[in-house]
Each structure stands twice: as C-alpha cells, then as structure tokens.
Length: 288
Image (tube, rainbow, N blue to C red; front, side, top):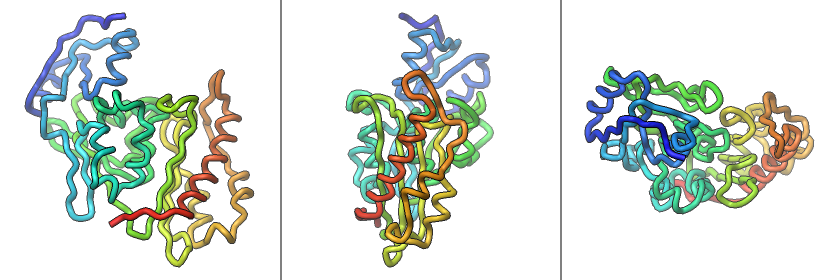
C-alpha cells in the first residue's frame, strides 16, 4: 500500500512549524514515524500536510536541571536505553524501554511520538503516568503544561490542539530510598503488550512510604491503582494479605477483544500487580 498524496514539509525552526499548522486544514507532524507511516500507508489516515520535525534540533536531548529531568519530545528511544542519567534517576523508564518494540524501531522512534500516539499498550505512557510527568505543549502563542493524567482524553486521542506540538516531558525522580519494577506480558518480545504493570516504591524502615502502581493495556490510557496504593502506604508487604487485597480490585471499562477478553485481562492484571509489588519490595535501585 502507498499513502494518499500529501505535501511534505521539512522545517528547521519551530516558527516554521506553527506557520504550516496554522495555515493547513488537515496536517500531522512526523516524529519517528513508527506508527504514523504504517497508518498512512494503509490509508487509515490521510493528511494534506505532513510536517517532519526531524530537522529541529531543539526538540531533542535529555537535560538535568536540579531535581527535574527534561526529555525533548524528539529524543530517540535508543537514547533513553543508553543514557546514564535515565538509568540513575529514572530507573523505571530505563527498565521499560527494552520492551518498546525492537532495536530497529527504537533507533527511529521518539519519546514524544509514543506519548502523542497514546496507544493503550505503550510502555512510555505507563512510565510517564507512574512518575506523574508533566508535558510541555507549545504553539505560536507560547507554552502550556499538562499533566500526563490529563493528556489522554480518549482512545488514542490527546489534549493537543491542531496548532500545537509536544515540546518536552518533565520527570521528577524519586528518592534514593525508592525501588522500581516493570513487567509486561505479550505474545512475543517486542509485540504490543496485552497487559503491563509498573511500580515505584519508596521505603522507610521497610515500610512503604510512597507508592505508584500503574497498569497498561487495560483501558484507553494508563490506569493508576490508587485504592491499593492508599491501603499499602505505611505498611510492609509481610503484614498484609496481598492476594486477598488484589482479588478485591475492580477494573472498570477493561479492554476486550477476540484474543484477550476482559476477564482474561483482569486476571492477568492481578497477577502482574502482585509480581511488580513483590519485585519492587525485594530489590533496590540506586537513585540519586
């Protein structure tokens, strides 16, 4: 298949991007293209103007500023895997990135492109949710900041307006006392996740002082398990009946299809929740 005809633009400055966005009636920006190009080729999507962001250097890079790690939207996924900053300060992201597609797709795919696609099974949106990341969105009118929880407004639909692009993502690392775990179930390594689970855990004298527990692949966007978080905070895993607590969880609007019906995803979710909690509780990460 070949895409329908479109106008290709290769700007080198952000001002050029916004000029095209404001004048076009049907445009899309191209980041890594790992999802967008197949959609165009299969004609699941047609555009009038395709705006390639790869020539805009200011959209790439990993920066550390005091207690904040800021990742440019055009930063390649392989850069996450190779970054000592990510490994030290955002270990959950460093663990999860190896599950994103394959080496070949990570060489081209971008962090911002994955977040803007907002695929329910995407690993990076799950990680962003666990860290409560902030997304810096820019237009010709300036910048605005949107939390990751408010960024998804529906199935594969984000809060970006037609005249805006995602500029960068800000993460606040957890403390040295933190631990993390990421587990994903898929048919084969590199396939889309059926269900994935992420856990950030901060311990104080072996008690859970702070907890972030998120599921992916179960709904239109990452699902934060706040009920279980609140129950476990202030406790150790040894003094609770974890199996009983997890068995009582409910998951509204669980995704369902012919291969993986809702009941199967719910069962798998409970299995992975228990595993990430136990793994995070029993292992240690070096976070500065």
